[in-house]
Image (cartoon, rainbow, N blue to C red; front, side, top):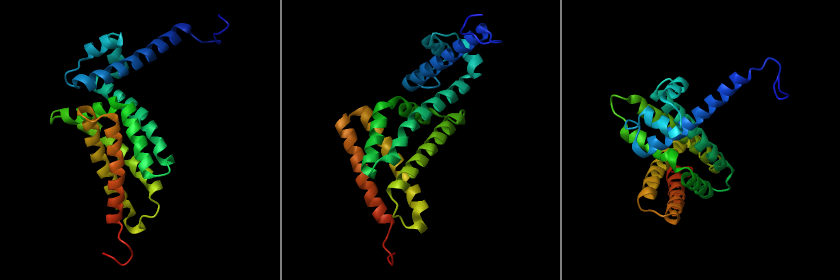
Amino acid sequence: MSPSEKPGENPKIDGRRLRGSATRAAAIKAAAELFASQGYSATGINSIAKAAGANAASIYHAFGSKEGLLAAVVDHASNEFFEQLDVLTGQPTPAQALRRLADSFESNPLFIRLLLILILERGDEDPALLQTAVDVRERGRAVIAEAMTNHLPDLPEARRGQILDDLSRLLMVLMDGAFIARQVDADAAVFRRIFDLMAAAMRGMVSELSPEEGTA
């Protein structure tokens, strides 16, 4: 037994576990890139296996099915993306929070592109695609609403929940458009300016939805 081995430890089993983890990580990375570039339906397991340097059987063993691989891809990518959004609550103003959000979009476009492709590609025969996207977007709205809760402490208590819900929905719609614009014709400076305009729109919306005491 080598000095690094522990009593009762089987190095062959550990080696297989390490290889399995490496295969899983490589498959998730390859699948995310292929799904985002050519679509979910058009991407086969064999293509993913080739890109990952693995074989199809090992991917089926790790994920059970192509749908299982998709779930793992979205889970991994969304966790990675939402970890970046933790900084939103720590920004001193809503405008600065939205600028950090723009930075997150710039640094991790693959996840947003993947999500939009899943939404656009979904069909009646594959409702799981749409549900996957819906679940992630609801998580995103919750993150945005929580951040805005910290940035907008003076909202009227009676309408606080509704205002935050409306605000998070508006920001999600605006971010969808901003991301598409970035892929088509907006440079980095214009993209960041769009998020500044979102902050201005948010301030106007909050003012409109939060009438002063005694007004309708």
